[in-house]
Amino acid sequence: VLEQRVLHHGDALEPGELASLHAHAGRLRVATGDSAGALRSLRRAVSLMPPDRPDPDALLALAKLTEESGRTDEAQELYARLARRVGGLAAATHWVKVGALARGRGDQEAAANALTEARRLDPQRKDVARALMEVEMARGNNSAAVVALMELLSREEDPARQASMHLS
Image (cartoon, rainbow, N blue to C red; front, side, top):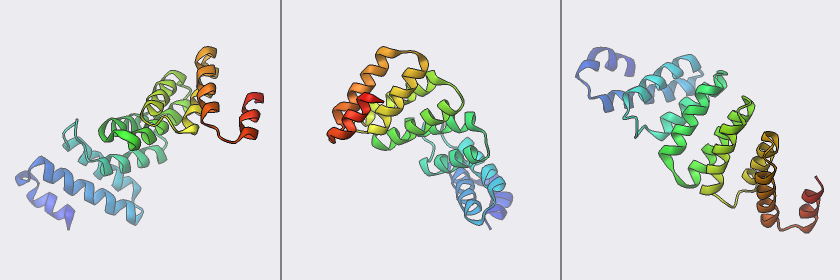
């Protein structure tokens, strides 16, 4: 039904309405297991949305599908765009994803930048401090790794775990 509406009335629809229809079609295709169709619909939806205000749900669905299809460089950019769009604690989660994808691709600098942004937005996350420490160690940036380790230690409440972190 949505495709028929777009086919027959697409020229008469406003870009926002057309984007919304494509996003809805993409979500329906995800639900039915049509990943390729969902990717097409969601890409079209996001391309029709204002670049500075894409629908976060459509962008997240597109990022996940893109990642699942193995295009991690494109997925990394989509998650970064999503993080810039949503802000706050939700953005921190997406910056962590950007960092993980960058690390997986061997881009330690992009990983460090993303994790630093995640830490700025949600300084209480131990996983971010640990990941940032690992990235900085991989980059050979020992002073930044020590700072990340000290932040991690300051957040750890269990003395035994704190001691184990000193030793690892």
